[in-house]
Image 1 (cartoon, rainbow, N blue to C red):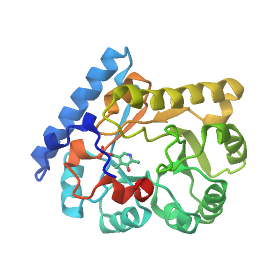
Image 2 (image 1 turned 135 degrees about the vertical axis):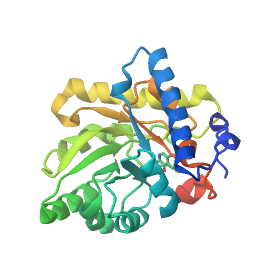
Image 3 (image 1 turned 180 degrees about the vertical axis):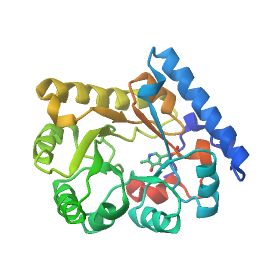
Length: 259
Ligand SMILES: *Cc1c(COP(=O)(O)O)cnc(C)c1O
């Protein structure tokens, strides 16, 4: 147990409790994103910063929104759904970034603007049916397991192409690209190949049929590794602790199969 991600420098994540502190944390993440993009010769505007607010209570999320956040990532559907109702007075787009069970598809269809963890046909089918009922569409990223760890959700790379061909039939799902969680390791030489694999999968799919992946975006990189992800082509980085502060709960709470 214990994902000791040495890249993340956990102790440095300060918990923002005022709008001003959120502005400071966000500015620092923005600075790191810009520097990584510059190093990689990439355009900053091709990279979305998705703040991840899981476990953060409403009071502090409201401060983050006041500091400029307009879209938030949440891992658990119930938590995201509850927060979307508590903060329905605010204009927030909610992205669900965690594994979804098909029996929760109806909630996602009601409030989410994006699901970044689509990895099974059964879920795609359930979502499409619910979305049709709501008259809504949903942006989706297909999650791929690039680390071959049992603890991670996401489909095996070899199943991706077949999956995308099936997902094309669901009109209410707008495929945005691919998402992955890299290996948890302080060893950058083991993390980077996960990001490289996602990118090369994207490129392979594009060559086979460019229509299968929509804009073909890559969602990869978290507080501890987003600079590496940007160097490898990330279009969306999902950053929690570097903006909101260190989480009290260990990652194994969110990825229970990790132990
Ligand atoms: C929690 C989480 C993140 C953000 O992780 P931090 O270490 O807080 O930056 C990114 N992606 C997923 C899927 C997550 O569950």
